[in-house]
Image (tube, rainbow, N blue to C red; front, top):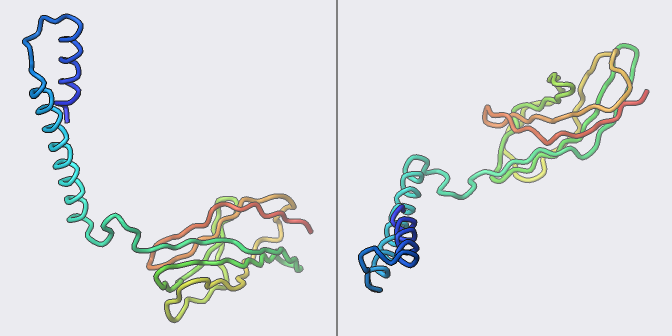
Length: 165
């Protein structure tokens, strides 16, 4: 990999000063071809090592999971604020959602989500409810939905929810 830049510097020096030992054209071609071949071998070796250490991916996504918010609504009763959320979880291949939590102001709240009995592919959203404290003030809140799949967290991007009484 370093042969190419060195050959370029030597070539420029030879063109400017003309005091370096003369290298015929076939010498420059040999340097260029050998640099190309060495670069290809090193790239192949690097890719092969990554494939051996992580054979399940092979550079291709083996699992796609996105968590999105479709709708939300705040409801208020005497003791609490209830947030109704309609998440959508797109998954290829099929997954089983174990739990869903909602994060507001950096705190995660439990939902009424029941773990799925079997894996599903595609849209698997349904309304979930989050019980928030009555002390929640009116305003805009950054909210994320976190799905737990195969004991791993899959967060959504942040959404702005507006709470008005």
